[in-house]
Image (cartoon, rainbow over all chains, first blue to last red; front, side, top):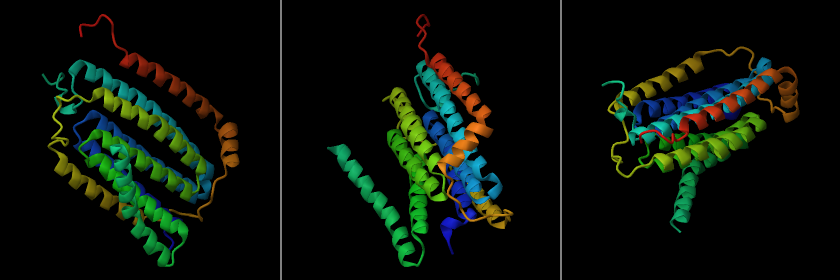
Length: 105
Length: 196
């Protein structure tokens, strides 16, 4: 058995990382923790894309190109998301998402 | 001084986490790639669990850096050194620092530090475990067609594809990054005459 040479090992690893990120997104109260969990999920998807690109001959360069694009878009997403969190914190004085109830009242 | 102690403790913990995998795989007749893969995968999953479960959010951010670093190592093993370099530069150099600064800007002593999880944490954990089992079953049941041996992708090949065939998405991404910078500055800008 050659673990580092099978596509399934990388995909299972990416699935596990994605599920950890999904759990963090659903379970944490802090908005920045939720953003970190989103980054974990993006990284998991990126790992599966790179693994597909390395193992499937038709996707050889496309996989890495998509992964680089995803990294750039994740940087943009982190910038805007953290700006929104900082702006909300300035108004509500708390980073906890279950205290953002302005639209519920 | 305490920071060094923390760093030392973390290095020891990482060694404890990854050494059994290395020993088992090297002495079990596997290749060095396998041992590195198992060690990095273990380190990545453990630090990802630390990111979602630790109480102090600054330590969550630092564990996230470790997670990204081991993921960069896995990119090198799978054969994409350029993606690994981009991972180190963008994720560790930019996004992690941004997140750490945002943590420091939004940390308040008045906030209750005890309760870090929502009330739906237990159902979320069950759902995540079910999801990982389903993903594993689905992956092992799927035939991926013509799967070749893993090939190391050279930077020149990638650069040729990037700047010749896919040059339009490359330029569009630069516009997107500009829009994100302008939008981030606009959203986070402090209004002068706003009623605080």
